Length: 345
Image 1 (tube, one colour):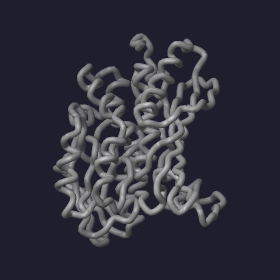
Image 2: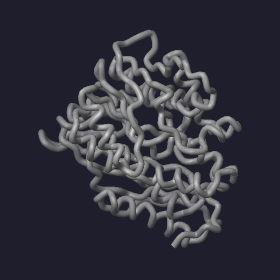
Image 3: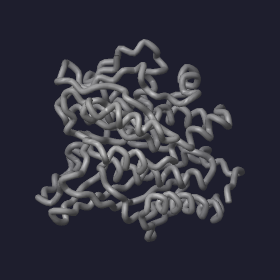
Image 4: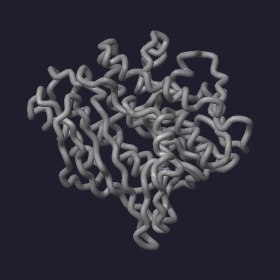
């Protein structure tokens, strides 16, 4: 049962992945921490990838990730679905399959147990849709509600996707439209229409499982999911890790309805400005419309996959992805390293 009388977003200081600590501050902290080495650790924090990967055998590796955030929508059940879809996405971004999940919950006393039940039910339904098992979790009291999952998945060590490895000549494909951070800001300000609210919720709640299953039939040189650090930030990580330049065509970016209007009104989340500051001199933008530049720095909640694929496979992959009810499209290319890591033209 849904409870539309609860205004969860009014209890949150930031919405969804927009609540993430800025990438610049996070990088400064992480670089001072001890470095762990283990020959079985295939992917650690060094490349800012979506999840950790630990080799168990020659044919099996374990993917481990955790993700949670404050409410991005008012409906508790939908909030649970979106938070779970966002956490599960990290496993799909590594080319893996989620197997086990644990709830991570912070919940205020001012909300009744029926609200918590709806949040957890939403998360459980998404875990079930993913084909994984939900096996408990941890809860604490907090003034601000927060929810997410710790997820374990499996992948073949030689078949995992990484956020680096893009090759010159690759085509870039994005599997979901952009603008969820801006629309969520409009929702929090109670300015978004019912149609816009329903649309962005449907995009955020969509599991990246379906796009990953389709992409798995093609050659994937690099992959990441686009979340709190924005298209610009995650593209920058892919470009730096690959030692290449990503050229992204702003005219081809898929953008959700209402985003241009709200961005022009100034309804841009604070996280977008942190993302812009972090990108610094590594990115060059030739975008003429300010609102569209805001979109590329907009922190996404449960965004799509960014794929680098061989150009001779790109059109067929994009066409197959386009048959889904929610899809993005071809947005750019990978070139040899130029003066900037990412160029928006």
